[in-house]
Image (cartoon, rainbow, N blue to C red; front, side):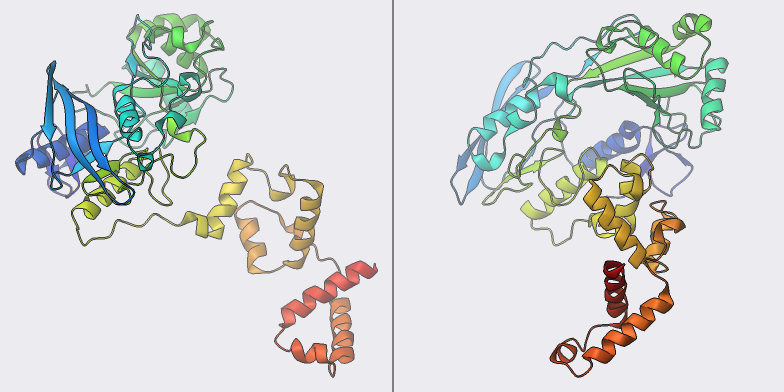
Length: 446
């Protein structure tokens, strides 16, 4: 399927590259075009419908769905299934049980641990076969897996000016604004915010900016301006806290927050797939022996990819369809960052708050080993790479001994060993290895 975007000023999607296009939110730029594609191809979308159970025939070598129970417009219905009826299941959802508030009301989570339509469906499946995973690993404690987000809609020039002062970009330019997440590092709520290209919605007024804010510490600590926990706050109060952290004068915060329209959303399971788990807790996209069952989304197991991304959901769906439908096409490969030493070095630096390797919190023995290794790779390509990526500085690589002395040591040792059995066995040892050995011998003597 071709990529689609929404034409500026129109609700009719066009393929990428056709006409004047503008990027909007994921729903209008991705979901609506895909729905149109499905409907144009003869597919039917059932709205106001909840699947409540899927019954399967299972054995160690064969698994087949036989029955779907669902509720549509309040009426209980069911479907009998054959081997030729393929079932693609979203087992669990990070958005399950989400609760919305508004400008004057805080969102209220009404579900309890482990509740939620997609979660309860997964539990019924998991009870039938161990290959269908273990949902209880992910949804056991809402306080562990929740955070709250809120969307601020504003046209206030003072607020827009405060944003531009931080980002150094006009938030209404139609171009990238924050370029990623901006974290309020002093926030007791662990609050961050971001602004994508404006406008985000087809019907959004040209002078309005939408800011997405979220906080990780929902339950226990008061805000730095609003003196209550996040989950108890109205949209207006959440906006006040954000305005405080972007530098709005304190005596102007309350009035400016009233001029914004802020919509909060409390998400009880938003980080549930980061809960401790083992292989098998998530079902394979297509379980071994499956005839017509596949799992898609963040709680299906596919190699090497990283959850919390749109790509993960799309890749599991591709894998599911290609496998069950015998499509002779490969799923796009996951970028092999774990096999790229440059990316591993950069990740190590970033995960240690930008500190160089010598300042990482390592045991003394490991630090000593690293320091010794550094001195052996002086003036090598690795030496250059570590400096370029901010993992070390030139003075970290001062040689253990002066090179003329090393050469004398090497010459002496080679002369002593040239006729020995050891020398013959080690004929393939490179000059670089001999230099390293000589340096270590010299270090030992000194």
